[in-house]
Length: 311
Ligand code: ASP
Image (cartoon, rainbow, N blue to C red):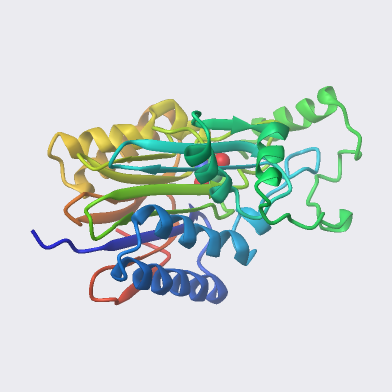
């Protein structure tokens, strides 16, 4: 059987249309990923590299461009999973580095664990010498004006609850752009990865779907690869990535598997999400329940398609 390498990447699902800079960045990442895949580089490394390019760009809500939590600190989540042996690694609430996806891969390859969190995850990444992010200037930290820098739990929680009551944390508030990728390599292995700075008005310590295997990502050579973006709380409650992978394993097409679960996210938990789905035979789709999803695809012919809306 001739294998046809494929790479899909995304820069988030939400309200925002794609900027020219984001489109250029996605095109560059797709071209680089395609070059690597055609050279026989494993999907794991291609997914990591594509996500690193997006994390490093500062154009998305991941790595260099990550959101701040309500206490003004950036805490990031990332994960990666490969479909041959179902190996996975993830970090949550990691601080001060540019490439959380690489930290996730290190958890997978250097430890017996799947998920490291918080300051311990940061120390782990620093031990491996991962590139550190410069401390953001105070003036650049987008903290709500109502919060003083040293606000305690009660003040932060009250503000969070007030904003939630306005409906702000619902589907329509999604706008910042998380990143993710799925790939199929020449050996037939699929991989999924994702990296994010989270959502708006997050309490300190909030963790989304992105580092949770089966929620934000899943990869299995006997089913396919899935990478999610959208309102993490809704994605977690439906365990979306595994649910879509199970659909693929039961014989649904990528489009049918994605549509079924995205509908469930909207109808059952009033959420919103976007997804990259890739089956082990190279069929794939990009679907979203949000107005936009910034994403792209490149197949064996090397022609990249980058758009901010998919059917
Ligand atoms: N899913 C991410 C989270 O909830 C955010 C996003 O994809 O935009 O942390």
